[in-house]
Length: 247
Image 1 (cartoon, rainbow, N blue to C red):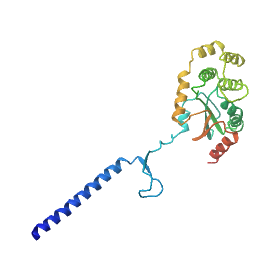
Image 2 (image 1 turned 90 degrees about the vertical axis):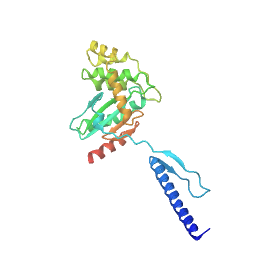
Image 3 (image 1 turned 135 degrees about the vertical axis):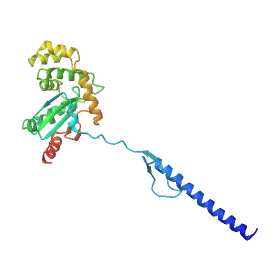
Image 4 (image 1 turned 180 degrees about the vertical axis):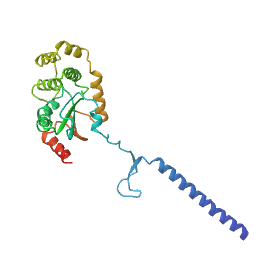
């Protein structure tokens, strides 16, 4: 082979090598951009002794809650419209933990903050699927609300559950009419409302809003935008309210 032929062959090999490197680099960039939403978790160490990479999906973002959206609709409210702090409770009338919260946290909020004008309290319905009596109770309380007695009925339903205990608390629907009589409601109007399940759609709306806000159980409170889950001691919610008042 002549010297000229050897030089031509060498140049061709260099050009081919450069073209192959460029193709690999381009393919690598394309694959990398396609995995921008996937996390690579590598085992500790490197080399052939390390575990193979595992692909993990990016975690779903935590729902962003604005309490002002939560209170565009509600079952009942109490307190001043000018209150500095808003507390929203998602609750279930057949839930024993909700009754525990009613006797402790809600009582404290009412006494220390609602009555003093510092907090406005909103109640929203979140009837759990395994509490068949809860939707009817929610409707009955709203029916009493037509006559300005929402929280009066709310309180009677919770107080009537009996001693708080673990497990579902059954509610006899006939008790609503007893409470209506004690509250001196227009009984005919109340009965028509209860029997027609008038507020079923509004109860479902509250439930849907709660799910969208990340509520998965009852009771769940929002102190402004801070979520507090469960029948926490009043001191926990009090601390959150004080932090909002101070902020």
